[in-house]
Each structure stands twice: as structure tokens, then as C-alpha cells.
Length: 327
Figure 1 (cartoon, helix red, strand yellow):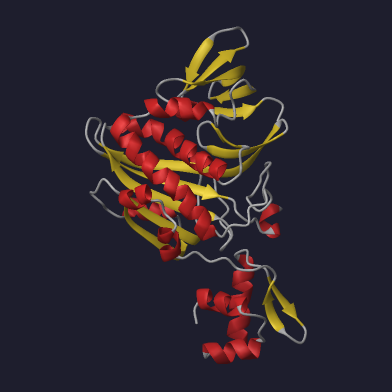
Figure 2: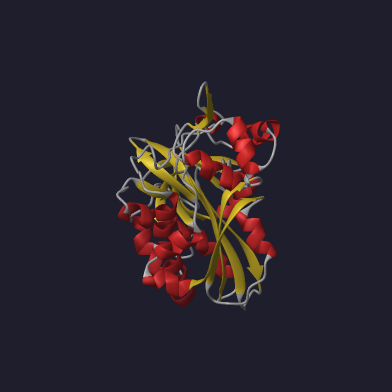
């Protein structure tokens, strides 16, 4: 009985440590250690007198076949393979370690990441069986310059998937944050990380990672130092398998379209999900901070801003961090 089997057993109903130990062919002390490890990973497990261990909330485990069954025909056509793993350092890191030479998408999802990361190397909290942690590896033509537009394309696709699922307030905060508009505030719902490499004028291989908050465990929520949101708070009762299938049904065809046509067709679509347009922002750069107003995207996916003195500038994600002024 591995950890997945243990959770599946608890999903059937409460069970004592003695019963679980007998079913697993191990000791009660070993079961206790595994329960404690699962709790530390973010799973709510109560110990109740007279009934034993019980899940505090229904468990929602990922299933590769269920996700594939929920994909749109266009997403299935764009898919090379889809795998779910239990625990991994990072889905992005694992796909970067693998090699592929096809123009279709390899998709990897994990129940837990022990070394999840976001933009600029920031840690990404990854509690077990709570959120979506998925990465897509794919080859693209057009050279390394193409990679700059990928966070925009992936973010648009993810936001559009959530719009189609009844969440019109989900927006993309340039360059790679999925946020929920809550009055004047923006609450982080997810994030994207694009990594890869290749030749300047030849094919490139990119890995697009997406972390999406689904049901945030209370213990992890207390550690977050910025406004956040999850799909459960928005009233989304879908399984994570259904959410993953919906996101991939938008994302994989979008990546295929980007490979064929580039960024230009996505610029108009970005306007509908732009969280920054018209907002007063602060640009954090290596030489200091500047106040500006965001004015949408430049043709290459960079952010166009108007400084307080009226000067219009274009800034790129590698050289600036953008914050809402006053937030």
C-alpha cells in the first residue's frame, strides 16, 4: 500500500491505525509516520476517537485517463503523451531532463512538487493533491526569439479556459500571473513559467509550466505573503481532472496556433484578459522604480507603458517587475 493507496483507502471511510496496518502489512507506528508525512504535505487527516483516521475533506486524485477522456478533439490531436506522477521536484525540471523531437505536446502533471518554482526562481508552494501542477514540452519553429511570446500565449489560453468555465474575472497580469480581479485588488490564482532553449534561427524546445490554485489547504494559506485566490473560493466544484482537461483543451491548440502563426493573432485576444490595461503601476528596475500607466502589449509581447512625464516606453519581462501602484 503506497501513499496513493492509503489516501484511496481513507476516501472509502475512517479506519483505525490497526486496521490500516493490517491491510498494508506493516506496523501501526509505520502507518502513523505516513499519516504525519501526508499531513505535512497538506492533506487534512483527522484522528477521531472510536473511528480512527479520517479525511477532513474529500480527496481528489489525478487520473491520466480521465484527463485524456475530457480533452477536446483538437487537444487530442496536439498531444504526444500525458503522464501523472505522485511526487517530483518540479514538472518543468523533469521535462527539461527528458528529450523529445516531435512537434506535439508531452504533458506531465504531479500530485506534489518538492521543488516547485516560479519566475525569477521564487518558490512555488505545492501541497499534495490540492492544486494543478502541470508542464507541457513542445518544439517550435522560428528560433529563440519565439520563446518571449510563449508566456503570453499560455496565459491567454489558461484565462480563456477559466472564462469558459464560468470565471470571467480571471485575468492575465503581464507577463505570467493568472489573477482574479476583486474590486481594485488583484488576487493571484496561478502562474506560468516558460523555460527552454535551441538555436537562434532554428527549432527550439520549450517547457511551459502552469501552477493553478484549486483548493488551498489552510496551513499553506497562512504562509502566503500576497493576496491570493483559489477556484474553490470562486465556487468551482469541478474535479482537478476536469479542470486539467479544460485547461489543456485550450492550451494545446493555442500552442499549435502559435507555432503556425506566431504571436500576432493573440494580441487582440490578450486585450480581453489584460489585468493591467489602464492601471497605475510601479516599474521595479535595476536602476530604480518608476511610476507609469500600463497601455497593453507591444507587437513582440512586451509591455507598453506611459510614464508620468508622458513618455511611452516598452519594457520586457527580463528587465522589469511590475506592481499595481498602491497595492
